[in-house]
Image 1: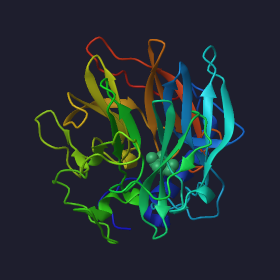
Image 2: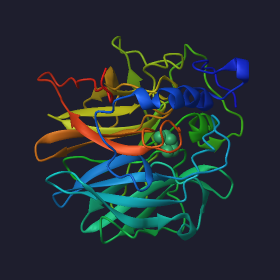
Image 3: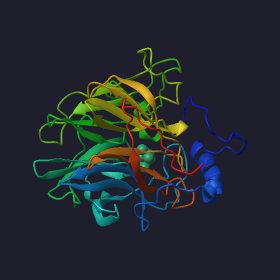
Length: 355
Ligand code: FUB
């Protein structure tokens, strides 16, 4: 693939970015002291989207599996085939795995790679949103529904029209409107889209141009269609200028999430090849969002992916790392920790490991 980002490749051995990170991680995994334990250890889980439904925390993760696929920068090693839902005990946050909630065999339009999902609740129905490659190998976002937060979910026959790329995240605003955010670079194919058209060639603007943005659209009242054309989620710097392609410490890469604290919209995301969870703030669900800082420093594993939710007056960060597999980048485990907003609204940066 073509990328204009040169970070962390091991050119001497022609390793992919992912292999280069994994090589280091396999060496350092045993010496890291993790601050939080995996929520479950009997399966590999990743990309945790957490929500409080009916007073209980539910976590909607990806279900990582072993594969012989190459560990490359297209993400072929993320070969997931189904989803499980976890619920957390409200006292000690111990997790229960409710089994398979949706399998690729039950999604008529999908071919492979069930990546980071999310969920929402409206009028007694629970909606599940997930990316997968369609039969042409193009990532799309699907919807499924259930009368229970743990599923099983019944998939719609086709993907949500107008969606593409990966990592759906649904934010419910105070007025009951729901917004679908999505997007991801490299294997997530955001760079392959221009004016609603998919191009096989990766196309990135020059490094001094505005970064490729995440996307957002309001969901229709039925929760399974877009109510409008997708819009760009623009992240701006301290001068009000869009963060640029070359600013890979701050630009959006994948894993969008939105939460609202004291009337402020927080747009948080992974910076991808710089491996951070960063955030930006704004006064509308559409943005623009002004870059503020880092929520979570890099974790063990190439990917960093999170969600943020409020439970009984405290905010929690859900994230993953590769500690359970001792550094295998595609075999991850989901974790949680408290997240603190300072009095001025700034989020305190979290380290997943003891220094
Ligand atoms: O889990 C597969 C992909 O890895 C997700 O969609 C990305 O956000 C990254 O975590």
